[in-house]
Length: 140
Image 1 (cartoon, rainbow, N blue to C red):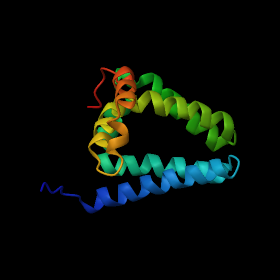
Image 2: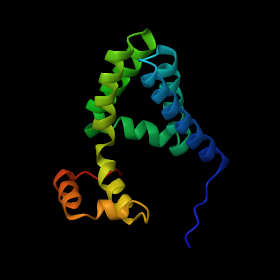
Image 3: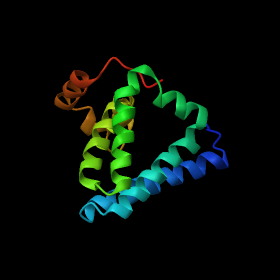
Image 4: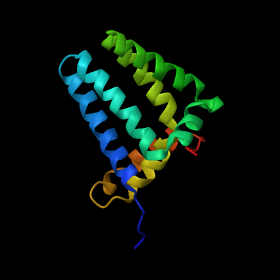
């Protein structure tokens, strides 16, 4: 079995990222509560930074192919922080999809190999949809 070395910094980063997603979800459920959304955004960004490191985070957000997503995510984050949560979340969602669209093929392969839900993602209809929407971009 392969073991992964996870440092304390990465564990804290994953926890912050998880809490960021939780707070963002709570903010959306509570009709776009500004406080929850702002806290979720701050926790998510700080968690990602701690998980992959400051240098890798800066490199990821400043890659030329990620400029459109980075700008949209940053503008959406700013709009949430100044008190326009609905517009901010719409812009931020577009930026999130644009930034992390290269990770969907990797996630699809992972889900196909997962024992509990893999049978759903190995169905011919789902597999044809995944191959149709699979981009040529790789996350790294």
